[in-house]
Length: 360
Image (cartoon, rainbow, N blue to C red; front, side, top):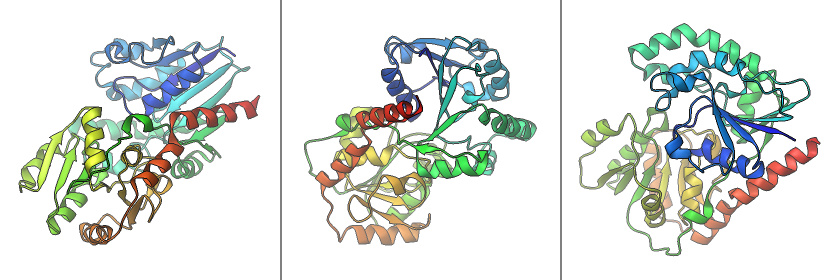
């Protein structure tokens, strides 16, 4: 079948782009459609798949900050001519699924989540937006919500990246979905050495909804070393607040450095609510247990008492008590690695292929 792969935008490599790469591996002759692509980053990333952009790419700054053109994306998608394609697979956490589907084609949507900034986390994004962002969100919220619900009707089959997201798809779109967890590069993050150092690790984007302050305050409360590897809107404020010698801020680091930090950390602290969450599995692949908030995708990737522990609410006091409990327990690096292997790219490809085979 002639196949089209759709992705909202290609401006940086994160979990969604790695899913698209696996889809390109499964469909090496597919064409990729996206609103804007930074060719310097993605040259050869998807093998021989050709990449086509919508008119959004020609607008100022679109290849750096595509999100600001969100209200124009429904119109851009409607202009795509997909009449020659038999299979359409959209990789979706933005409005990528809103294409016009040919009558003979099948549309599978791999949904990372319904747009959080329109639905479940609208208020969080609104509170942290600037004046222009708040104005745009007020003006376009109802229009984009209506479009998002309408575009879901063109999807034949939904795949959710977690049970947590499947519940959200059911609640928002009133659609059932199958669950196929996204791939994690477990081979890259696997480390041979198991020697742990005396620090806890926070890794990833420093955004308010990820609750980094909860983890930092917990470490401050019980005077534990903490390394923060990541950047984002909270980075400068956190650096100014947590100046004690037991706090280290590395900023954004290379994948190789992150692998080293995963491997040597006593544990990863994961205090946010994520749709799935790649970071806890990268840490487990490196043989490191995870202390996670017991909500969201972490419940599907961390095995309590075996590869980590859960705390039940985003409170520094609760997390501090959990850290003390963790320090009285023993966790096996090998068990952590074996759990991460259940989410390898090979497993993803096998499950996705099995899903599409059932449809034919």
